[in-house]
Image 1 (spheres, rainbow, N blue to C red):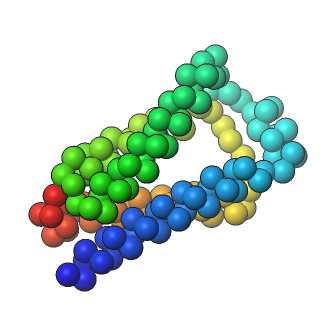
Image 2 (spheres, rainbow, N blue to C red; image 1 turned 90 degrees about the horizontal axis):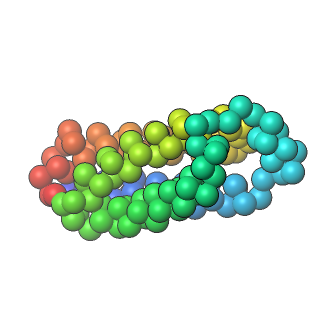
Length: 130
């Protein structure tokens, strides 16, 4: 079916955007790192190690979930929604962050793709495949 192809391509695009976000984060300028140090911190500032570990766990679970969605495994659908909500909460409690123009565009496109995947998962005939 055509909608399955669109869904799988969206998952691949989401993975590519995730890889580009990681690469752009690695190559941030020193000026941007200094600016981020002086921003208002969130509730998880006192638990920096916990925040980093939680971020890594969510990152690897997200990669696993993209694989589960690509193969139409049923619990991937619910895990994806949980990870999106958990990621939003983690970002909210981590505080302010400054993005580069490239990082900001990637973040916005990633949000659009994530929304598209969620709409297809819950409001299209794709939901019958899970």
